[in-house]
Image (cartoon, rainbow, N blue to C red; front, side, top):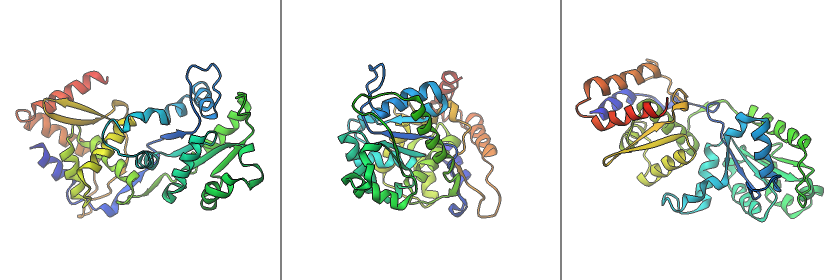
Amino acid sequence: MYEETIKETFKNLDVENFSVNNSTLDLIFVCGGLVDVREAIPSSMRGQLYAYTSSEHGEFHKSLRMAESFKDYIESGQYDDLLHFEHDIAKISSQVLLFLESPGSLVELGIFSSFENLYDKICVIAPENHVEGEDSFIFLGPLKRISSYVNNAVLTYPYDSENGKFDKDVWKEICEDIFDRLKSKIKVEKFRKDDDGHLCMLILEIINICFPVQLSEIDLVLSLFLINIPQKRLSQLIYLLSTLELIQKKKRSTNSYFLPLKKLESDTYIKFGSYVDKKPFDKTKNKIKLRQELVLKLKDKEQRRLSVLAKYGEENV
């Protein structure tokens, strides 16, 4: 069975040797004011960021994930509340940009300020009149709390919120500040089992190596690393990765298989280091070994999986 080959590939790895490659993913979660695609000139700062980067910073624009993209989280049945869902999005994101310009953004500020483990990712961007004087309720509350933990967590700029004036010079400055923050992030760090963002990266790496892979097989690999999480929680994280367009799900009969997007197939999210016998984990060789086992030795037993794999190759050239 393919499951046994997967088990042989990952058993006897020492979690203490795992490291997370933070430079692979550049996801920017963008929250704040309303974005109306029908407006010729967006009236909100968040809308203007989206418009400006689409023409001036194409690659960065592709990394933006707008809050509106996740409206179906309740309908999916995976998450019961927005608080938990946005926390998970933030954990896997490189940065959380929060434009402080609406009542809704104040609620989001309150949500994120309650999670100290997110402070190093939060970047609050606000019109200067919202926080000038540093004696407003907003500044004395959650903004001051976040700023006390992280330098330059709050960025203020001149912005006419009533008229929504679009100033390219201001947006050039804002983007430069955001890019500087991204450059300063830790590129590689030690894997932590209790970090949901790290767990998402590990799931991505398992899918990347073993695809097409089933949920039970992902769970098996996690258990080999003594990571035991409830089935519902694993399903939530898989849903999150799919919603963020990092993986895809393919069904064949009653079976569901998970695969990376073709453009992400060669990415590395976790470096496994070495096995307990000090032999290094060779990702390329292990991927080839798994594929050979599937195609050459298990082709009669894994017809559905092989059909998914063949279709994947055709659709993602």
